[in-house]
Length: 389
Image 1: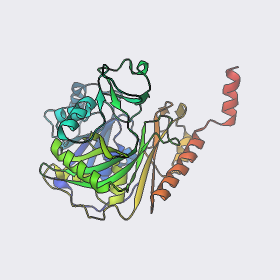
Image 2: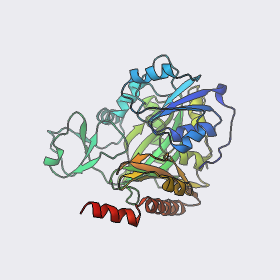
Image 3: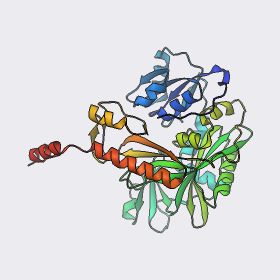
Image 4: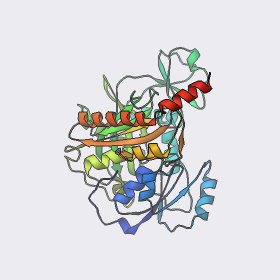
């Protein structure tokens, strides 16, 4: 699945290496922008391979030393590196890295430290408690590090908060509508490109109540201008550069900052489509001090949505499933033979339209079709049943 973004002259003809556990969305955005792009990731999705000018896969990467050793063995001639999810805190000395400084990202990624930052900067943020504090229930239990929401859970009693400490935190639970703002920033200035609706724990996509399942761009509410202003101010105060995202929860008292993603966000596909702006190119140019111009009606003409479909049961992508998937408008296409565990993402569905309702309807219909084709056949179910007797 692809779409066109107005092309500009590539910055200094840069050749860029993208590193992450899943790099498809960044690699394909780089290719749409006209860059020579290489990829180092774990999944090797089919559509990513179509975009990459060079590719290498890793099974596991636990340290900066492991990554630096692999980079030294790769025979690729690239000018800069962009680090994706899972690697944004790595400090790759000796390479030109178009990311925020590793130390800054580590601080922002630590949810305990981030909560303190928001309090000192004067931004609304859910209260974070110590285990010894006197707080009401329910409360949200989250990992101190990590994204995606899969490990988030509610605790309704003191018993359910046991074990929280170094790796897990206790946070005030707020109800509201999840949203995000996509921002591009230089060292001197910043601009909001789009406000996005977040799909969290969507029942027709996942069984996890707090799992991030995608987004719809644009998201329209009475708080659009306020969230844009907060996001721009926050990104500037944190001193971030390039493409960064601010997650919000729109409560009955207005928008509350939840976290900042100091890297390319999963909204990249929908923001580029809905705005017609190459966020990837804007990110690269921001490191040279050039701030993208965002028309006032950038996301007023069309909608786009992406939905991450999670597996209900263990599934292996065989040739039959693969051929059926080719008929859908999907991204992050798994290779034939890839095994996916229950609860893990299978693929990403993309849909565009003239309204939010049209987009969500298209995403939901496609999710239903894909779930159906991944169900084992009647014969297989009968065989499995007999074997279990």
